[in-house]
Length: 105
Length: 126
Picture 1 (cartoon, helix red, strand yellow):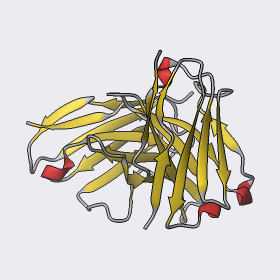
Picture 2 (picture 1 turned 90 degrees about the horizontal axis):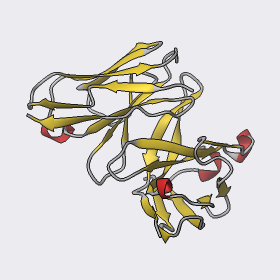
Picture 3 (picture 1 turned 180 degrees about the vertical axis):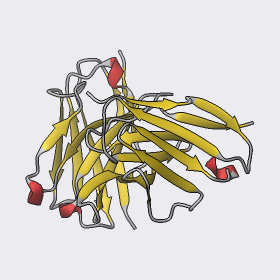
Picture 4 (picture 1 turned 30 degrees about the vertical axis):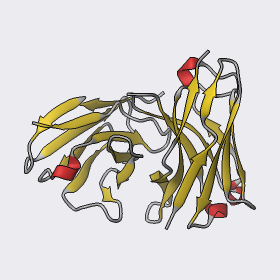
């Protein structure tokens, strides 16, 4: 079974910061990776699919990169509404990473 | 506008059964691949199961922890997705979300879950 490992599990950041979250797959998955944002008490929202494609309606400060086993989600300039938990997901087996909570510094 | 509304959650004893429903609107339900995803209190996301469209065979797949106990089904005449949960365990306690699979036209593959319901809470406890 494919395992998805995210790092860090939590982080503190300030508005305007560049934020990078990493997701590593236990075996190569091509570009079959999605990223989600979840705010407390809300359902997750799809941000990125196919590792680097921005879902419609998602701000362009979000970007994804990587292929094979190593992937990153980058927020170029963190906004107030971006404080949330982020999950990666392998798109074939649907395995999620453990999540990264982005908190206010 | 896509809407997914889950219902049927509640408190059930270990070993009991529960049936969740998801009412869908705002898209062509017949053509959609649908999923259930759950989230235990304070924990991360876990995929539960998927059902393909009838056009694509209508087949189902399940996560290992629920295989043989949970059944995903669909009623295209009523735009409804269901999750029948049997032999429930305390570790099945979670918010259960209904989601649609996103079809990436460029790659010709399903590439994530693009619409989500608000979730329904299932609590398994004596």
